[in-house]
Image (cartoon, rainbow, N blue to C red; front, side, top):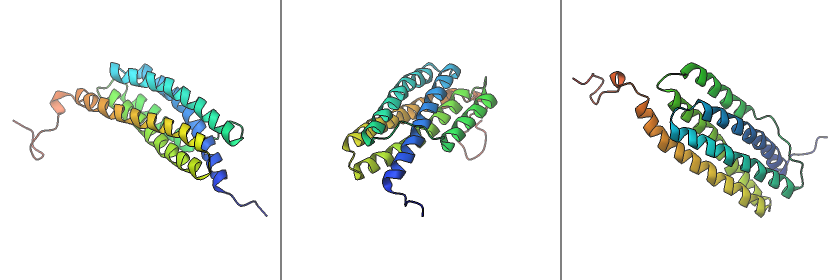
Length: 177
């Protein structure tokens, strides 16, 4: 008879998943920084790549706290997001919308990570891993901060990425005169 899975098992499996995702995020951020034209966006990617490398170290500490080896488990969600980002980079490269698309892809990564870190923090608290919960919350706050920064940057990029001749009119579906 198979052993019944526990919240501890779910915590460990999710931790392995996010460990993989965070490592992929570092690679994707470096690639995005190289592709970004907008200086503020490029800087945000570079800064968050460094931050994400520190987040990987924090995850290693969480593995130590729970007495398990730091192992990555393939994260299908992150693979899908990164694959979509690469496809979008190819489709929109050299277009005025390229940076807007990059920012949107980066936000998809951030939203996934926010969901995962929020869950892990809650579970760590429930399982009595107060130190792990603190480390996970530190990362969660960084992810939220990065998401907010990307939203702010996206507002200026989206405006700059819209050619004047195709700007939406202020009327009801009619081109302004």
